Image (tube, rainbow, N blue to C red; front, side, top):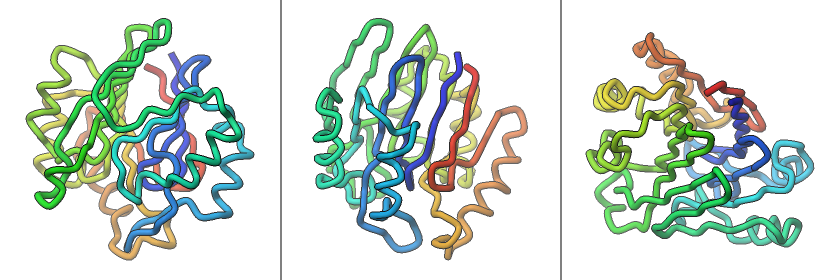
Length: 223
């Protein structure tokens, strides 16, 4: 099964899975220091692009300004009123052979301990895709939530690879493929996160690790 993943900015993606298109944290417009956002110009390009046309689901892991813009999401829902909006809350969405399970996970950083934050397990055709959002790196709750599932594709924030505890966790989880996101665009990378992520990805030589870090970059993964 081919999965096509296209970046908007930060951790925002459009996932093409068979005939279904799922957005996760795709629209956000408030720029955080050292990171990127969906600018007005990029927003218009996304709305006109093939990869972001007619989403079936618009999902949000949590209500932080680098993951969610109410204005942009409202506009997208106005253009595609049949899209189903999945807000941060526990539960499952079932659509034929597609299941999306939203599980409460701890947000990275002690000051965000009370944030309503949900990771997503997407299952289709017996394959599993994990998007833990801003989950605390190496959180035991994530391993527990994964259970016996073999993760075929994990779309992760880059510290899961740049931090030793994240790499150790991934050796336990053993995802078939990894796409690293929440990286700044080149012009915004004042901290060298892109170079660090690329360098540390080589420390997982038995895994297919790719950087998803440029606007409208698309990666196709066979799972």
